[in-house]
Image (cartoon, rainbow, N blue to C red; front, side, top):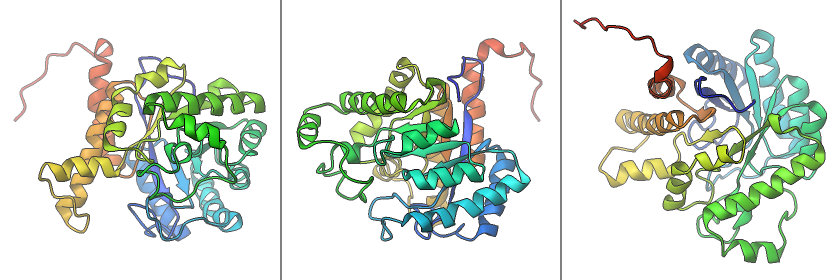
Length: 316
């Protein structure tokens, strides 16, 4: 997806987790038919991209690493089923090159790699060979594995992409400096493999091994990714730091209650509104309907110069 001009609305990417343990809809869409039903719903509500994931990456996941063949068996049938009835853009959420290759052959268009091409040295080559788009995510868990905010996450990637000296150097950097260094290395890997720049989106890794303050700083300074010359793919839906802000301010956050579940999506949609106002190209969300509303309002404000100069009627 090319970096959009200032006259294009933010696209919505709906999440379908085909895992028995995802951080918000654990196991609900594990069956192919249920995943397909959810895909139809997300598309009807306004999603133009669907992100299919077969491995939970949430903090404290009890399932952890998913074997390559099992992950393929989770995501490929769902991709094929969706592809049979829709030409919607499909992203596969995986850091494993063999899973990505199988998903792309099944009809996916985008590889959403939470390790930013650093978790599997063959991933960049697979993406380049397929001519696919790729989301390169800044992964603080990999760059600061001993950070208190990283220790609660599962291990990402094969081997160790960074040396001991790298990790020691990274500890001295601010979160934005660290993000820049991480992207520099990931983009160099992409360029070496032959992935063209217009095929790349950047994700600032919100919610992955970051403190509350660091999450907020990266959200505040999203334009730094645009300044690097890339479109932004942003995932903040139902993230812990959003829920923490609600909880600190007295809002119900228990997902077992109607208000708590609704509040998580309402708060997430507020973040989407801020992102859309800044011209973020894609937001990855669970509840498309609430985020669609946020995108429409924020985009209308951002695109005010393009609006019709109508005299509005009185509402009854």
